[in-house]
Length: 407
Image (cartoon, rainbow, N blue to C red):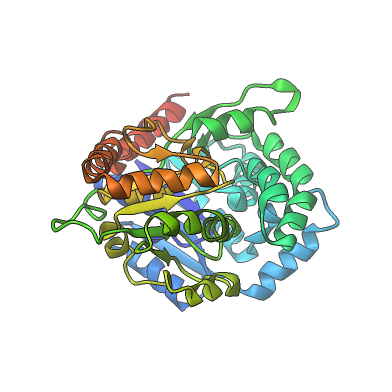
């Protein structure tokens, strides 16, 4: 199958969904052309590495000035900032040129466009084809329901600017996401929760072809290691510039960690993730806390921890941080919000708790009961092997492509 795959950011080990879908589709014999946008030299290098898996990779720069102009231009319109954020006219023209290859007969069987930031490009593809009287199946991977995320952010974020932006963007994002439903041959999301949230936005209650395609985890990369963990070592991981993760870390340190230390004074917390703001960097002054910032490899921190904590209070989609910890054979304690997109069974595959006292008690119980901790860790690994293997997920995406081609 010949696939044109547009991603508004470079797929890499952090942006795991497009990176692994592209790699595994290529392993299945598909010919993939990727068009993507890079913001700096590191992302350009990531795009170059994709060439090992793809027939072609076209990577175009997008600068801060263009992004700022996009957002300012969108303010007086009905378009949400997320839909305007990644627009680069050269990328639109490049898409048109790719679609016109083969003397207009078409060089591709299907077009795949990712995220709300890519939605303007998806509409561009649809308009370009319509102007020529051509049809080509178009799959839009929404990934998450962004308006659902904004509803939570407006209330729960610790950053006033994030709360304000979410409130300003909520209505226009709901309208835009609802309008996009039904425009494409298929819409993808990562969870049933996000599917339900999107379908609530469909205009006049109309149904839309929305399919759940879960996120996976690289089971050969994230693996348990022999030798056991460090006693009473806790790890909290994620992209630490993301407001939901900042709120998660601050609330854990303020409300949960003191309770854990009261029961286990030897407990130590490592906060792992790139670009932590000053509010998180300041936590390193506490003798029980280490803030790593960017690390070359998150796995040692997950593999050596006794317990991985994910006290997320709000978010959308599947939490990769939870899947990665489970794949590393580390027992996970999370809030129900962090686990709600998973089919994992609380109490067997991971432990869930909501209020600070209950969350701290769940951690302490696992630290004190090595047998139960190992059982949870083993069950968590088995869960991701059954439900989140990228090989299986890529095969499912292949079937979705076949379905839209048949129709």
